[in-house]
Length: 438
Image (cartoon, rainbow, N blue to C red; front, side):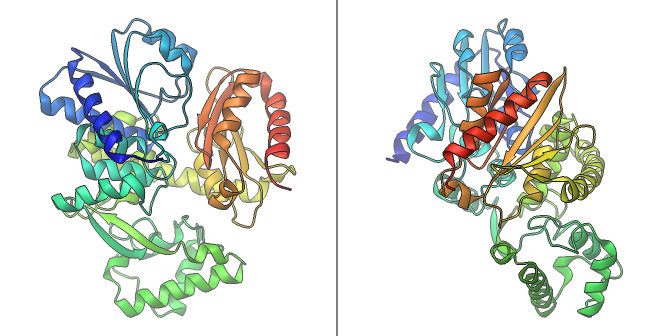
C-alpha cells in the first residue's frame, strides 16, 4: 500500500539528519540519474552553507567500502541500498531507489513505501523529495533512468516544477535534439526508438527528407519545421516501423517531453537531451563535469558537449556491432562486447539493440577494471509484467559466484571476476529458464 504522505514525512526527517552531519562525504553513481541526484544533494548543502565532500563511483564494491570505513559521515545517493556491508560503516544516510533488503542504516527508498523505484521515482527525484532543490535537474535524472512519461511520485515532482515555472510539458516527437541539432543529425542519430534504415544512416536520412520535400539546409532544426512538415515526418517514420513489424515502437515516437523554460535552448533545455549530456560525462570518466553542468557552470558545459560528441560516436559503433553479433542463447539474448564496446556504454547499447518482439531479455558483457567483467541486462515492460526481474537475477548471481550487482526489474547490472563468466552464464540460463514463462 502506498502512503505518499508518510514517505514525504520520512524525507523531511532525512533532510534534518543529513544537515546534522558536520562534513559528510556524498557518494553517488556515475550515470545520468546518479550525477543528477549527486548535484541535487550538493546544491542543498551549498545553499545551506554547509561543508561536504563529494565522490562519484561506478559501483559500491568491497574495495570502495573498505575505503569508506575511515569516513565518519556518508550520504550514499543512487546506491547503498543493495549492499548489506554498508551496515558496518559509521553514520550513514542512503538515498536510493533500487531493490533493497537487510539495510539497517537510515534509508530513504521509495521501494520501502510501496512506490516503484523503477518507474515512479528515480534517485534524483527521491533526492528532490528530501531536499527540494534543483527540480529540473531531478527530472533530468528520472528521464535518464527511462522513467518517462512520469507517473506516481515522479508526477508530483513534475507538478512541483511546473508550479515554480521551472518545467513545462510538450507533446511531440521524442527524439533527442529537437532544439539543438541540425535536422539531418536529429534523425540520423535517433535511437529511442531505433528507426531501421534511418538511425545512424545520414545518407538514408537525406533521402527521406528529400522524398518528403522537407528543406534541411542552413542548419534547420526540428523546432523550425511547420506543423505540416512535422506531421509528414512523423507519419513517414511510423510507416518505417510498421514495415519492420515494430508496431509497439510506433507509440514511442510521440510522447511527453519535459523542457526547462529558464534554461537556454541548448543541450540543457530538454530533459532527455540533458540526460544524454550527463551520461556522456559519466560514461567517459568525467562525472564531475556533469555535476558542474547541473550546478550551472558554463565552462563545464562546453567540456560536456565535447564528451557528448565522442559518446555518440561510440554508441553508433556499438549498436552497429550489436546488430551483427547478438546471439540467441534460448533463455536470453547475449552480446559479447569485450574489447569492442566500452563498459560505460554496454548497458545503453543493449537497451538500444533490444527488440520488442523478443520474448527474452538481452544480457551484454564488456571488459571491466581489475580483471572484472561488466554485465548489463535489459528487458521490456511486457517481460516485467510476465515475471522478469533482472535486479533479482543479478543479485542472486553475484551472491552465488562473487562480485557486485543489482538494479531494477527491467534493467540491472553486475561486475564479476573475469574467470567466473561461464558460471554466470550458466546461472543466468538456469534462473531465466525457471522464472520466465515458456
